[in-house]
Length: 304
Image (cartoon, rainbow, N blue to C red; front, side, top):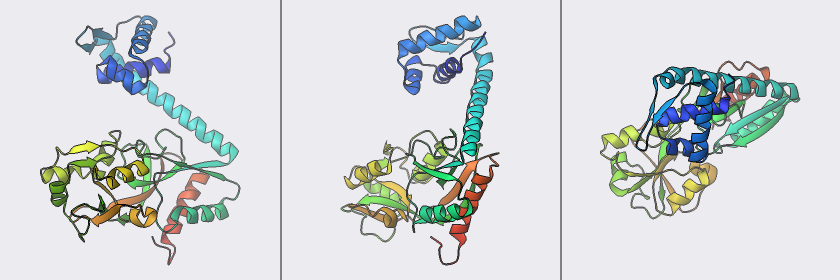
């Protein structure tokens, strides 16, 4: 029996959702195609994985027993793919750097100049990610190192904190609180019907950047939530008066988006900017980039 990794991915998705429609949506395939592939896997391995009728889907005993091995096999396959990608980049002397948004004071270009002096033989490629990947490509191996905003979930990501940024609330410039010097979460909730929150893929990151604990304490956990996937989409939603959102203080300096006001939020933990890489990645080119980031940050007179 030769179990296709793709079929195992389908099996795990259905097992976790216990719903073929939701699993198909998650996998970006049609429901009939997913059902056909699950039947193929069951035929290949000779056991039924699910008990299904028109109303429900449940794992069989065999399905329950095979779920963890399937997850482990997929994880091993992903780890192999990432390791192979890293080795290929190392042979080509390439480094891929991920990021979400611009950082203040021309930070990344300064890092690139320093890194070029350290490793002139390495070709550096930049990749910008939307909020759907809080690791900026590290989890999937699309990037080798990344500039990220903490927190980030996942044991595969290692990071070095750099500096703190005060969290501020983004408001339309005609919002009742737009002229304030400082606000509390409770005051924002008193005027907000919608709150722009990050996507659901990383609950730790989403809860921090949506101030979920603070909103719950202030009685606003049930506020309507929307999920812009990109920085530009977030700016447009906020400027249009449809929602409010948290961000870091330097965002105003870096982007100067029209139609928005940035007001500091009282009694809330700061954001942390960090450089990150994958656990176990000991390639010298990656280590040199981390060194360049830390050196750029700590260079006298150049602190962001």
